[in-house]
Image (cartoon, rainbow, N blue to C red; front, side, top):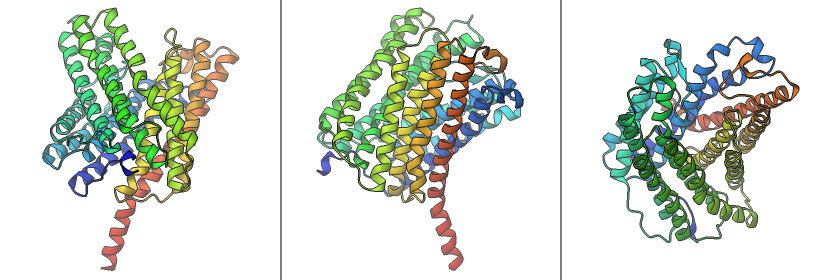
Length: 461
């Protein structure tokens, strides 16, 4: 039945053009992140790390890579979906938000080549302690703030709860509310931090609470993508849209516990740190586990027949697999070693795969048919499989004490077990990079197709 399908009606006005513009920022952010990720992988791969003189650049590259591949990519994709889920009003504010986000991203990308350095590997939002980088970061943050304000001001009514489209709209509105809370926690923390904190400690505490809440924004966007992909894959869920809405509401409800934690315990206390960790670990599971189980049942009982349905199915399976493995690894972390990046690589890549799969489904609806269906079908397996190897290598190496956020000789690869683990990590990272390149190629060829057709028509005219 149509009302059971989880898709949005695509507007045919300026909102569609704005959504495509945000998608351009997503792709270009991943392109930039891919360049920096290649430097990262090579700087930590045994033997190769001795050939390429990039070890000193490791932390700078890591900062820009993380901010592009997580922060910019994820929040820009929120712009893609929130633009489609908005009423045609306050479009000046919406385009200003986009322009600021693009400008901020550009400044962050060029900052290392303009002399920015002094990397601080704070969780969630690592930074380069340099005025150029901070100018870019704050400009992007201002653009995202305007994006959220536009989303909250122009969001349409959810409508009847028994439709799949209404459930998706609720999920997108919930993600916007989560972003508002995250921004509030960031500001609250900044004014509450004591004057004696500086350097790494300052930024670690500044981004801790808000960074955890921001993960709920990513997770809610992923759940929306999962739902959309089930319909695109020809899969019917064994639960109704009303139950789906209830599950999404549970995920949103956990977000409102963040201000309570912030109010009850000062930002520098151990309780604040632990409770935000628990909120993300257990609160996120309350929504993802039941919905993931329902989608898994649907995948087992329904087949995908067309090429488009199979592509959506592959992306959905890979996303759920990586996100689930990342979540499980999060519960076995002990100490500060490379098991920690294995955890968040699994979770974040699970989110990214869902958004990549949704991109494939969205492009034809936005007027940009896919030109490389065969490549697109291989892309989720290449990207996801490489990341799975990457994660397993990190987990193995973490078990032998290899520390995180180090490169070169600092890794102390003095045993065959450590060398094998990090070598497996490096191989998986390279394969995953190939998968990322495939995604960029497929999307860019689709986006550029209409321009080529327009140029050809103009030449004939």
